[in-house]
Image (cartoon, rainbow over all chains, first blue to last red; front, top):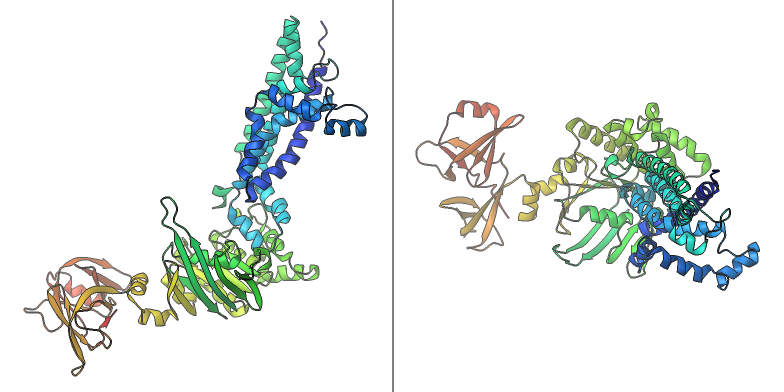
Length: 227
Length: 356
């Protein structure tokens, strides 16, 4: 029997892209949550946490409605890229993004908030603009925790099933990620494929988690270390 | 020159009692100390001036610039206030070397000046040799000098220090006093320092503001305040006085004398203008002004017998602690022949007896 490794490569690619996107978007949101005071701040926090608790099918349904071929966003996308977003591998990236970003935002917010305020105050009295403060003080001081959060987000992106199957579907060789492939293999009675893929993905995620722990638990230049 | 009138209201909420700060201060040069117990609002005052906290009301003026004006709705961000700030734990950026810490602050200066200014500050604060080290590789004194140099490098108009000597051991404290005196002499920057150490006020301050419960209760030179505390609260905060609750039994302007009643004893004092018979006041007298003598028969005039609770050796004297929280300090030489004495009397000097 020849095993098709495409789902694994696709998953890794999708996870990498969604992690990069999640890091960029998530850091911006985390920065706002950690540093700004405004009305509805906790509501925003709740909104970005929502994907963590909603059933994947519900989330997938929302995304289908918002990104589908009939929707405005779907329309624009199709006009620019010449192909619909839904049921493409790009849709799998979106699915993984929604799966991974909430955790990343939560951890990044906590990491940014754990930077001793004295450093930020010091930088401000020294004339640093808010962006200089972020890039040269807050981020370097919190980067280990943030990196650990990104690694976790990558691991989580690898494992999305529900949303992916809702908006990217199960097209072998195009949108079939490893989680979907395992489901497909079990459904079609292909026990050996399911077993191998399961073991492979378990091993990979275990390694990633161990790496994340290692990064996160190393020296953190935060509150305690400042004393 | 800093001129500030700051009011900040924190309403009571839950189990916190609420707090109101209402402070006026004006300093032009030299070192001004905000002295008071923790929770008095000293650091809050500093934070309002630095721009970390927005006061409810008032106005803060630094030289000709309005930093804050409640009515005109001006509230400059800390970046635009040009106040150097030295934090309690120095807040040196841990991921940068000492030189990078200073360079970060020097970015305010024109490009051409930066390098020269940096070298000059490193030299001035004796940091050139360790400029490449990170904060955790520095000694306490070096960190201290670095944080002061960093605050001064961009030529602030005011230097704020928040309990900079708290938790330092004696040699480091002495080093810090020396550095700050150097800063005072070489830079023209007025300095505002928050402290709860009287020693620090005497070492450094030209002027001192005694702060309690969000209010300035006395201001003046440290010596002036210590010699003439304005009221019982100031005297309590200074902690250098014995405070005895007494009742005025008699006042005689003719003989320029008075009679004070302490527990079961009468103590003669000078005439106190502006007081009435029956007033409850406090005698404020320092442990050095009181005299303790071995009891010899009946106590003489203005001597009262008190029970000695314990003796505490001090660097060059002995402190005798009597019942009623009365302390007397005696040179060690004088005390040595008296170590076995059980019965003591304390003598109050009549003419210099101060009441509050």
